[in-house]
Image 1 (spheres, rainbow, N blue to C red):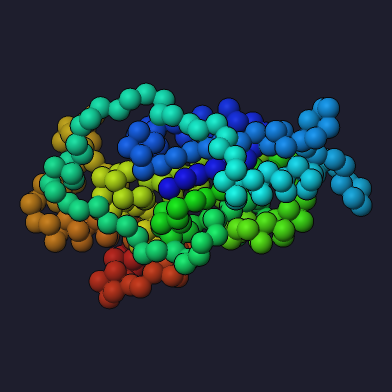
Image 2: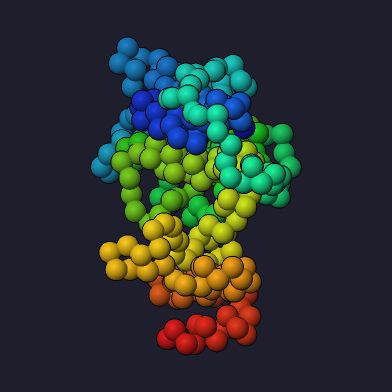
Length: 278
């Protein structure tokens, strides 16, 4: 997969070089190009914004800068700053690699030769785990990082000739710019690419993967500060452990995000667990 990010703050994307994303870059699974939008500005001040038509506060990012930038990225005529991994990772197999579990991809998303353009904006469609799963199959994703009052809407409309455009929001709040949202979305997508987390089993039980929040997790020691790990996890009965984890996910979802249960297929046993937790 190749990610291209267009921004006026290229250094903001440095976290994409770290941790598992950095390892994916080392392995050749991921390529990241970061492009300074001001490289397409034509005036002496390298300005990328202007006052809004109709009046109002703030500034709007200019179409005559964004348009050529997205044209060049779509055409592949600009490479930008290609990120390298921040630190070489240990060549150590993960536990699921040792077990010989084959990496599996999620079902493919859209069948198109056009790259995917993601525009983070509070006015966009909420970004979901289902989006991350579908987009983990993409070969080329471009991110447009808006600032100020956003990007002139004509840029987004015109880009639909060269991209599959998706305006997305990561939450019901407003950020200073799109860069933080890009970090969130990119990490959510890249971690699902086969080989990044070892295999699909590493994230099949994540929160939201089955419509529920993930239940609690535990590790050594068995007793810590007087708090004991639930005994069921030592039972050796995998079916019993799976049921316990399902129950915990149901109860946590009921307590924290009950609206999610409206979209989950519940068995009679699931419903009994929820009724007991009320």
